[in-house]
Length: 393
Image (cartoon, rainbow, N blue to C red; front, side, top):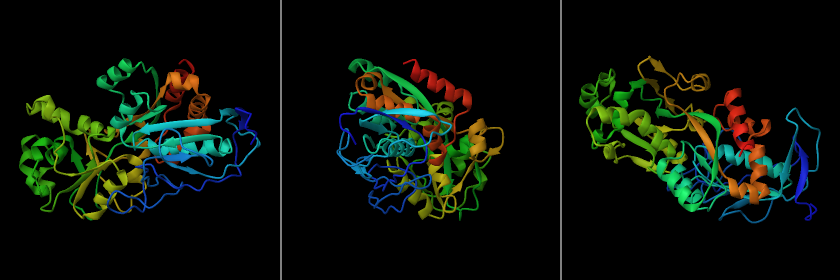
């Protein structure tokens, strides 16, 4: 590549280069990971791949942006190819650092891979997934260019960004269906309502070791499924408090019942005595590893493991609804939620690589990675709204 050229016009199409993807991010869905929080490696195939180190860089050979990581792929020039219906995307060389949600991480990794292919390795994108909350802490301290998020930024995080002088644009990029799951061997449970989830996961369930231990509380809070709880070990796996998936689950399944129970707001949390992890692959392993397990993950992690995990239908008052692409897309699945990226405006202005990466993210080809990663595409009008928000920054 000519090092004096900071930008090149690249047409989107089939690229000759392929990436050898050695992951070091934390939580890309699905892997052959083992216990102890370390995953041996990843591929770029399917809706999910394990991420096990501090960061993953999708680009050509060279140094990572913003922290340690592994850079993938040969540093080769791809040149131009026949244009597709998506038109042309202008990419600048440089480095981009993305941190935040482990749920959004697989999408950002795939867009980074595409950027690396199209730029011949000149656009290097480092992606890590410590969790939405941890990602916002870095973002609002000015340490990252982009923050992946599985929930909107909260008031404390907004204040932290304002204090640091960080201005940003919020961009909705996909839809997820937070999935409550168990082992397929657990035939007693196919559907749960919100009171039932509270009785199993909520703060008043602390110490319950069997599903049946929660039956009395489930009856008390009005669950229609209390009698279905089996006399079997209640082995719970889920995200930790640093995760946006944790925050969303609390909002969906805990807060309403906790408030009705008269608990103070600081107790609107899950029980503390479960196997918590920032690595979604370890959560999946926990759900798969016990015949009477219970846990929650993002939809892509469930989709990739449907033979070994059973998604539990959710009854929010309108009957039992299973998590599917259709029910998540049309909002009939009660635990549907938006996924976002937050872009530091100043960094996008100062570093053309950041703007190029986001341009690609919001292009037809970039948004195609949403389904590749196992999530649900935004409706056309919401895609337009996101693109207009970026253009109007």
